[in-house]
Image 1 (tube, rainbow, N blue to C red):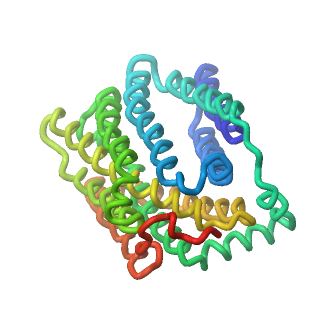
Image 2: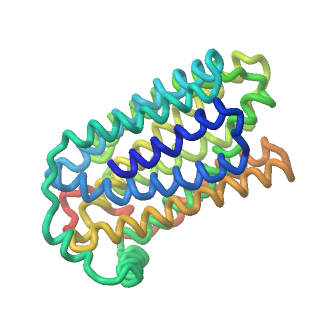
Length: 336
């Protein structure tokens, strides 16, 4: 709830500054930094929160339902955001975004959670020692270590694409904010389908293989963005299709990976482990975005999209030969 409240306050400073006529780029850098910190805090708290609410045998199904809800928001969010930007300007859209964090905090407040005593008492000790312990577990764990390498690699390359795709869609393809939002919203339907398919796919081919397939479907289609062109309709269709296939893949990837993480992470160090995992995973994202922007300036946007998509697909190499890719069912894993 604190993470939500902090992010609401941070986002709402942007329309406030715009209304006063003092909005400048340095403020946006600070806002981006604080939003990233808030997201890391939220994610670090989310898994301990999740395991207090859900039985272990329901981890995959629960993650699937949560991801379905998230994907549904991705359908509506871009379309609504694009329409708000086009009709009422970006500051108004950000004001709505800020209020959404307040709604999230209010909903979370209604959930009664009894934290596990072991997870709380084990957090004693200096901050430095807790951070080192979390890193030690993450970097040497037979399941968490390959998961971290894979997801960090994926994020580095997909954020290269994220950094330039909206500029590409607007300036190169000539699409309006409303059309881009609509295309992304339509594409996000793939995410809903992926979230609903994650559990059945895991039962059919195994959770580990589903994670690998999801990583490929998430990344490879992004390279196809470089082929977009022609009429605005065809360009929007390519954007929507790529988003749909990529969204389908990321949900296969996320739902099963989150379920495996929830099972194998030790309760006694869950906060530290999730914090370390999230910090590295999220920490690479701005690096990928900066590299994407620099590459777009140096070699062009289309080659950058190709590098981001095809380079990201190499993340599956980090899974080969590891226990993670051999996981059939999370029910077979040993907790902690």
